[in-house]
Image 1 (tube, rainbow, N blue to C red):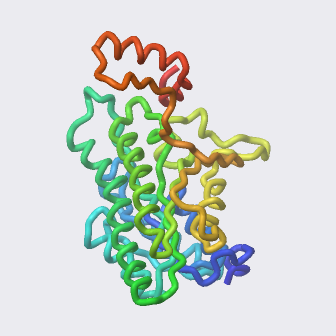
Image 2 (image 1 turned 180 degrees about the horizontal axis):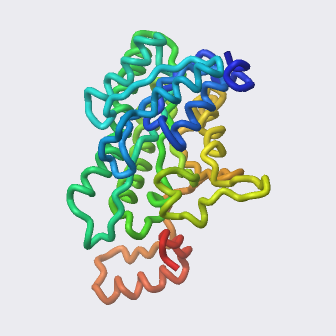
Length: 311
């Protein structure tokens, strides 16, 4: 099947992979890449527009046709994974169709960009719902299945790949809701990795940069495809090889709780909050003393990265 689905090496042969938001962009690229490596793929997509409003139809079926047309195996899932019922049915679709679930790739999302003073509560709730809750619920239901398998004495080699963003790492002007959601996904990844390792589940996250519906207009200059046959660093297909490897059994037992920034041909292990310079007076500070200590500490501290959208 791996050869028929695109000449892959069979890295994920026989594995069952569920991918949310897999109808377009990064999710579609991941689905095709997994199929090329021999995986059975559950292609989830609700078919919404860029702002999350209902679209005319889901593109999931088209991706399934592409995979089957290349000799792969896939099934479409159109449920809303930010609801308990939709997330549960995603796992059920994998089990009912293919008899197992090995990998979950959380990728679904949309944007409603506003500056903070113009950001409506509905826009905040909608973006947090699809990105953060839309990661939590599929992860919860998949984890419950894998825990049950492990407790029943069945071997589990499960993988979860979550999708954060540079906005979650550094912030992004005009994207307070999106940045908060993506930062929450990073913390959720760390907690899930710590809790689920005992059941044979590894959980990692990526912060990708690629040309998608969410980036091609906002960052039009950066995301434009080059001409003349030059390497297209912003093609979403560049991100998928790392996602496929993280979702495979080839990671071994020690790659979990990590965050990887990936763009073009570059992969970076991101190192999060760590203690920096410290002052300990061993007694209560005065406000003025605390301020003086902070000034001295900041001189010795590494400067923070620039928030996206600032000069």
